[in-house]
Image (cartoon, rainbow, N blue to C red; front, side, top):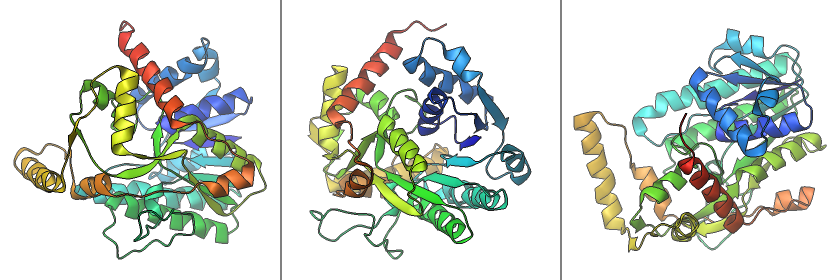
Length: 342
């Protein structure tokens, strides 16, 4: 029996379908019933028989911060894919980030220990890996995390979650940690995650920034998860990125695939510095959620290049080129946009 946390998210929903294709017996956790429709939407990309796949999932209404409910979900489980997380760069969201990402992961790990789970797969982020002073130097799994850096609250809590997983390995749980870059894939156009980038580009983004980071297709993330869990590899972490792209290149390729105008204006450091401060003031007076934070502008400027050689060498892994990933995801977006609503 396999348990998937975060089953109604981008990675979790795509993972569920691939697990069902292998005829695995699967449980999945959900928190809000309305999110289940998004899982069906993802399944529709792979099959016309959505209902038969979806009905094979044993859905458990639970929250990873609710130990009694989570305890029920762990019954008769052998393997766990922990995809649940909260993503935010808003400073005032730190308590929620800590509760879900760190305490929630600690709960998952503790139950893995007590239920003698055979193997745990945790989906982390490249945000938890250190950086080099030299931006041309590739970042690997061994690049040291500096806790004294000006790290985002999201990165801090995901790093804290990794510490909980490593604790679990010291207490008898075999585990693998994945550190994916920005994940591109269909189905969650307005959820605020990485897929919403497609929606934002379609609606128009006049500005680009100078930063560089790693990108990966959701199918490659899922494929890496499955292969690592099936392998004898344990207690290791792996960077999961297909390519390092500038934000400008990513936005231009996406705009081209969507047949919309690409961004043509460079957002200067001064513009970004003023922008996040104005956004903070707007939040102060209106209560509206932050759209631009200090750490978001920092990430938009940073040049960080990652090396996925460890995964390639361990599994002979080949990534989908991002040009293909962007085109496929954009096609799905346009198809969904043009479908009549029921």
